[in-house]
Length: 185
Length: 308
Image 1 (cartoon, each protein chain N blue to C red):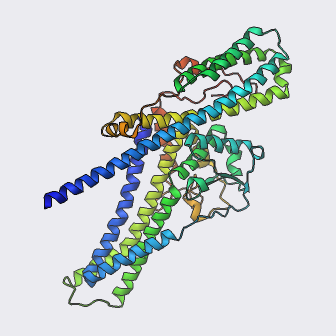
Image 2 (cartoon, chains in turn cyan, yellow; image 1 turned 30 degrees about the vertical axis):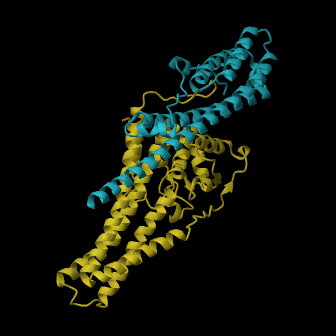
Image 3 (tube, helix red, strand yellow; image 1 turned 180 degrees about the vertical axis):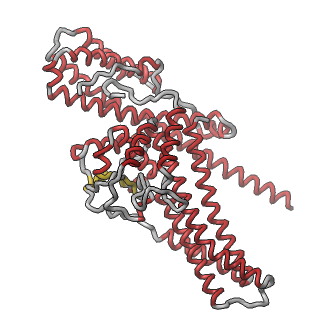
């Protein structure tokens, strides 16, 4: 009789643990999805600002065609990128192109004083702050998710919960992260 | 394990242990009761304790913050630095954006309130805005958002209820002892039992208060570590705390209800003790410096125009 009770208690404990682990994994996956979607929101904001930015620089430096084409192409690449790793790569390329655009703008004092340009630059900075934050949240969540998917015993529950590891949103090449700091303030 | 994860885990573990100690005290009180007044009294005592806790918890302690003279920001334009800091930190914390207030109080301080993230409030004092730069403000706001995410308001309410319950019950028992309740036939231990019960009854409320304050300090460390988790830049908050430590401006407003949610203790002086709601500033700064040293790189900005 006592054997039955012991087995029943053990089964209950394992069952409760299993449910808790299942729910934790699902919560992490949902949080990661939410994080990915927040990154997309900020990326879209960023991409939408760029055409106006290019136009305002064109108004003063129309001949710098190479730079404009580079930015536009990088933007297209970034818009079409799928998945966090590819997106991060494409954003790195876009950073470099934008860096060159701002370097061009350096030479034109009238442009630097232009209200429209300054406002666009301000919005771009604000968007980048939010993008950084979204990226931090996403990566922290993915780290927790991937850890649970790899460690015992939660790694046994993951397939049942249909939860799999995810990619980080990280710039693959650390050199790309060190974009030249071009600010006019 | 990286220092940030280690700090966060350790803080959570220790605050759980502290809560456990509350129940040890309830046990000790029950033991004292049964020594003096017999086992039946112990069961009555347990029932009373449970009722106290349940009633207070379900009363829905809505920490309605009287944000004296504070102005709620309705849009970004009203105060961009604060709005931006709160919005960015909400994204970093994965929380809905709380209501934002700015108070004209010249003392540099900030606090967060609200039972859960959906009803949260963050308030920043003008004094704080005057002396902090962008990274420091973000660190402070991240600390407040951490209190919201970690459900510290709810937790501290539970702690206050548990401590209050202990104080009430101890008082109740002391009346019973004073008026000589209980029959001597049930009381095997005689004078020893009386002495033990009296000691427990005197010490229990003090112990409860110490535990409550310990929990508060532990949650402050956790909020600091969580702030570093959100910003990935502990130097920001460390620098802000240094400036706050050096500031001499006293608080104009600050109730004890929200004291434990402020960034620095608004009431009482610089000295910290076992009865402080906040740990000493030097210790907080030291732990943040530890986190900063342990970071491989500060991956702050993704883009072009943000300055490092």
